Image (cartoon, rainbow, N blue to C red; front, side, top):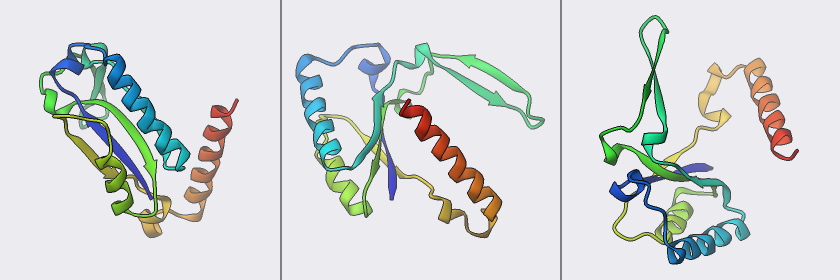
Length: 141
């Protein structure tokens, strides 16, 4: 089972306040534990929304680009992990150990191919497998 662990943005992260050396050290130690345990697949911090943009699509599929910053800080994210474990409970244990204070983390399970049932035809499964293999090859290059 894969999970996306979403680190919520706050006023500091949205104002571009960088982590302290102590915070980076704690996060590095935590990430090292995740990697050694084979739980962490990916993870990164994100720049403030002032450096981002959103793409909005209308009912006809036309798109409009809206530059940040975005007002609703509590709806923004400052970073993420993609973690893999055998159960939700195992992920909960790992996330509870994250070195945060006065913050909130959201955890969402990532869909697996099997979750789509009959809508995921053999052809679509083959395409999905091919795309994942290509991405993995590109990452290892």
